[in-house]
Image 1: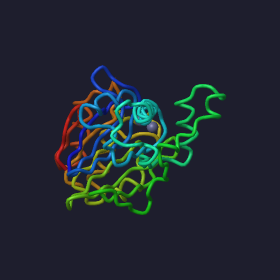
Image 2 (image 1 turned 90 degrees about the horizontal axis):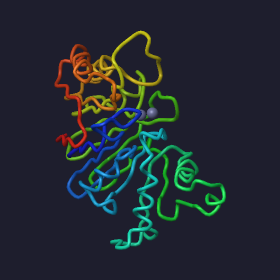
Image 3 (image 1 turned 60 degrees about the horizontal axis):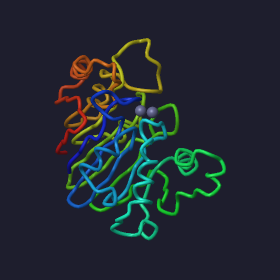
Length: 256
Ligand SMILES: [Zn+2]
Ligand SMILES: [Zn+2]
């Protein structure tokens, strides 16, 4: 199983990275997890958007779903389609309000939205709280604690376990999705401080503690803000977690 980081910048793109987006690949099976601002560009360097088996949107903040609109354009209007996207709709696992929210992103006026039904080429489904099998992957969604309905993911393939927090503050959900995982990809938006709000994001220290509590094999930090000190973030996490810690970069690949 291979993780490809399309973008890892938290809340807004940075000079060095798009917002959140990842490819997870196992053999011919290909998942895309989140599709934030500017991620469709690197996605096309790694994969044909028609080859995606399923798209998972952890939640509907723009830094996790803004490039859904250009993906719609790509799949709907590409002049040389390998198959009819209406006959083979792309499964999109996302919060329940996703069709209206993404239609509003795609069609800017109420008049246009009257004629916009994205379900002709996308198959919208709720986050899989009961595991689903997609190609080589088994995927389970676990609710986490953020500003809007948000899910983290636990994904198994090739006898390995990959866990992703999505955006979250400290919560029990992280322990459920990450228990014993080989790799935890954890958001770490900011440095630890008593002034940071709860129920929103993790600090490097909180991500490290979550990795330690869950007994994961390796910790990858992502979703750090453009203004967050990456070295300090890694140091904080390493003080709370004994295993290997790495701050991911756009364009990275990681074997799980
Ligand atoms: Zn975010
Ligand atoms: Zn968010």
